[in-house]
Amino acid sequence: MHNIPSILQDYIKENIAYPVGIIGCRATDPETSLECCEYDLAIFGQQSESNKVLNVGNHTIELINLPIIHSHDRLVTKDMILMPNKECLLLPSFLSSQNYANLLRAFGRKLMISSALYHQRIMSNLHKSDVLASIWLKLSAYDFLEGLLAVSGFKPMPIHELSQIRQLTMKNQVVANAVKDALECIGLERASTTSIRRSSEGLVKLRYRQYDTDLFISKVQYMLKRGMLSDCYYYIGKIAARDLIKNERTENYDMKLTQTVLDLNHDVIKIERLHANLFVACKLLLNY
Ligand SMILES: [Zn+2]
Image 1 (spheres, rainbow, N blue to C red):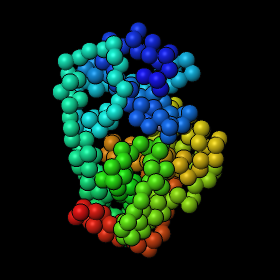
Image 2 (image 1 turned 90 degrees about the horizontal axis):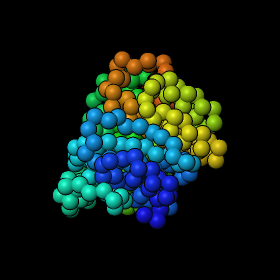
Image 3 (image 1 turned 135 degrees about the horizontal axis):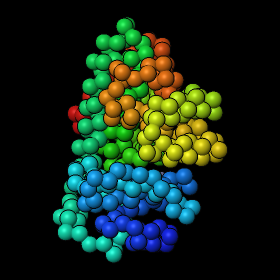
C-alpha cells in the first residue's frame, strides 16, 4: 500500500462499499507513472454504475466498474493492489487465474490478427479513397504495435506505449523494420506543437461528452508542457483509433474532423509500401 496516498485509501474506505483493486501504472509500474497519470480503481461487483473521473485532493482517480469479470479484465487487474478492508467471495477464484502469460499472448495475437484483417480494407480503398485507406492503415499500425508489445510480454498502457515500444529488443530484422514502418504509418515524424493542438482539439470535438475527456486533455497538456511531443502525438492517435474501433463508426464519422484528428498521410505509394511491410511482419509473428 506504500504507493497509494493515504487520502485515496481513506476515500475508498469511506465511499466505496465494494472490493477495490488499484490497477494501471500507479499499481503495477509506479516508476514509469507520470504526474498526469490517474489512479485507476477497479470496483468489483457493483452493478449499473457508470465509470467516472474524480479529483480527490491533488490526485485524479478513475472509477472503473467491473460487475462481471471477463478474460481481458484478468490482464488489466494483474498485480493490482487490493484494498485489504474489503472482502468478496468473487475474488479468490478470479485471483487464482494462473494463465496471465497465455492470456497476454492471446490478446496480442488477437490484435495482430485484427491488424492483418485491415489488409482487405486498405487494399480495396487504395485507389478509391486514399482517406479511408490511410485511416485503416493507421488503425492497423496501432493494433500491430500494441499486439507486438503483448506477445512480447508487456502489458500495453496507452500513455506509456511509445516508450514501452522503444524498450523492446527485437532480434528479427523483419519485425524491427515493421516497427519503424508502423511508427511511420502513425506519422510520428509529424509530431509538433501545432499538429498536436490541431489533433487534440479535433478529438475533443469528436468525443464530445465522454466521461474521461478532461483527463485526456490534462494528459495532452502535461506532455506538451514537457516537450514530450512524440509520446503525445502517439497517445492522441491511439485514443482516436480506440474510439473509432469501439464505436465502429468510421463510415459515419465526420470525415473532415477525423482526417484532422488522425493527421492523415495521403501518399498512396507510401501507404501501399508501409502496409505491405506491416502485413508481412504480422503474418510472420502469427506463425511463431
Ligand atoms: Zn501511467
